[in-house]
Image (cartoon, rainbow, N blue to C red; front, side, top):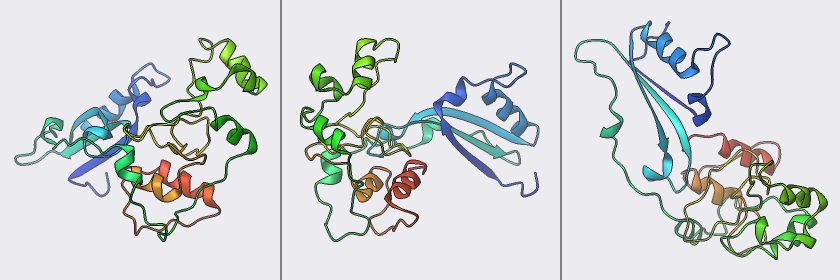
Length: 218
């Protein structure tokens, strides 16, 4: 209301489309209404970043609001150029060791013991039942109850990366390197989020670097 920008751009998780306010109104409709009453033409779409050149399957809702005025038109999402994102192997195979932030958060001994059973392209479902810790055995026993989680997902080099999250834990799919028993380095994850190689991450510990990248917009 104060700055009256010509264009507003919002980005949020796809769950925003199904969220409701306490009065029952859909949140996305409330956002649109609030912007429209302030003089904006609003359009939104659920997009997958991998269809726009980002090397990552990342579904996000994008809202664009254009201020009404002479010749103003609502944003047309079909006008955006599309380009298929690169696959994992194309992103990680040429990273110079000397780059800053090219280090990884060490895995726990338990995680390392499980990874030796998980092939490239596999997940915790590749681990023999008797090798799983009790907690994961309980989940394996009732996959429907736990919505068939896909822990320890090790995407292969010929796949597109899964969604980069702020939590670099092994139970968030996609943090495990395809062929090495480790997490991706900060630099590798940064490439999946389209950060340039000369961008430096700072903060309290390596976990904060993963968090900054996962919370960013590619």
